[in-house]
Image 1 (cartoon, rainbow, N blue to C red):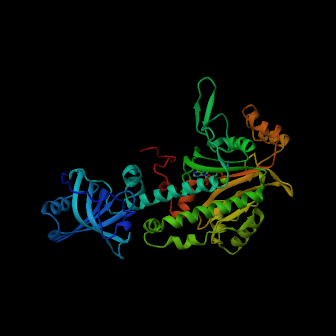
Image 2: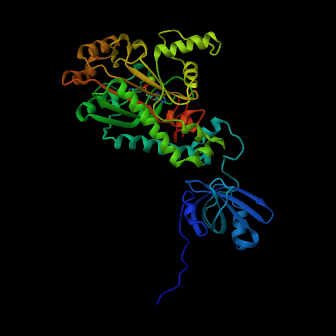
Length: 451
Ligand code: 4AD
Ligand code: MG
């Protein structure tokens, strides 16, 4: 014999709701928005995977269901039961004919959810980042970020790279001393938060051949720009026996792979993020090979642009490119452009000089289209012991701290190359965002460390 218990409707997510067309399902989430028009309610539910509009005609549901929903405050948590109906006009393609609702926590009227549909300033929103991330656009960005991170790892994992994690607490600078976060380290003197795992993965590359690292990196950037965070995530491959040419091929394939994965999974999210304009079309052009431009060619391009009045300030030969320079260069192409062989003087101490012109470094910056600037920086590394030692001294770096790094040139040194990509810059570019603060759950910048 059996006791009759009502069979609960299957639990699903908004992202997967298309698999349940015509069925009654349950969703667990929150009330994102509510419109009422007479005897009809239009609640919008969110569950983390997306949003869906519900339809609640007064006559079609039990009175207490209608009354509960009608008075429900935004961001109250709930389980909703309803029948899935395809609707071409709905952003997700589906709507929910609501049958029942169970409230988990009702947000009190006198302390409503602070983020409303009206415009809020960035400071207001960043101060409430823990709540702001619930809104559809911010959630969509974080979903795309996760896919970018997964695709980046997958690219290397499926090409026989070994992931090796460098330390975060380090005894010396990697990318210049001015941007170091410093702390006391017991009786060992000062330690610094890592700016890049590069020096350590040069060691693991000489041990394992092809490696990558992926983790948080830190820079005490005093600059308040839309591209700079003080804490950001970098993925860095390093390859033994690879030269600059190999590295550029790796970089273009890597970025193409990431864009492909985002397009496979996130067309709806991209629409949500850009407010309807189809960013996807712009991303469809992103496929290897990417244009390559030497520093000298890029300088000549800027020179011409200045003489035609297309940029405000002339570019001084020998200087690094400023943000307006990078924007102009990248605007000439519909895909990322790889600028190589910068003057050694404006680049890091570990970069191999170009044998054709010793004043240039065998390095590459990948500039994203539409003025997003540098998303990847990389180079071939100095492989001669004597030259590297000289560079360390010339840059005023403590030789003692670099003895282990010099060992890599003492014992079986080989040409090797690697690059680093900042995840947040990549997310900003792919999502078309004004500022990197929206690309990471909790951004750390010059004047913000809360929440
Ligand atoms: O060009 P960078 O400084 O290169 C390195 O750190 C090398 N050691 C990497 C390597 O060769 N393994 O930084 C690499 C990337 C930049 O292209 C940019 O995407 C990102 O890291 N990045 C930042 N992202 C956000 N905020 C900042 N303050 C960043 N600084 C660099
Ligand atoms: Mg750089």
